[in-house]
Length: 126
Image 1 (cartoon, rainbow, N blue to C red):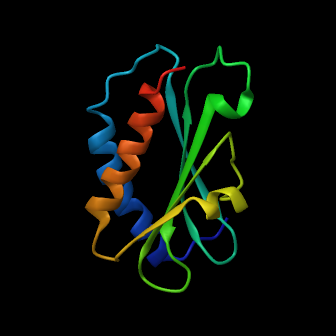
Image 2 (cartoon, rainbow, N blue to C red):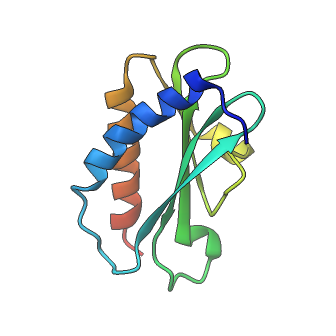
């Protein structure tokens, strides 16, 4: 996978904030986890976090949430996609339907938005 430098720099800056904020979250279940992955869909390159929650949940898509973040393909802004389920190939149409944009200088805001989403998923009632 070949990445352009600018796009991954944006994702790495957001990841620094996410890491700082996520360390403050206490796990509700011992098997909660986060998995970091990279994606390249030809136009956007960035990072994704797969959040694993309640493995006892029968509905597979409700066990996981995937959050993607990158530099938006048509600007220098930051885009965050999120979707239910385990997705490791990049954002799907469902992720696109659930996106949030942040200005290029709002890495801190984007990182906290992602962290709050992770916390909300891990702490939601099963």
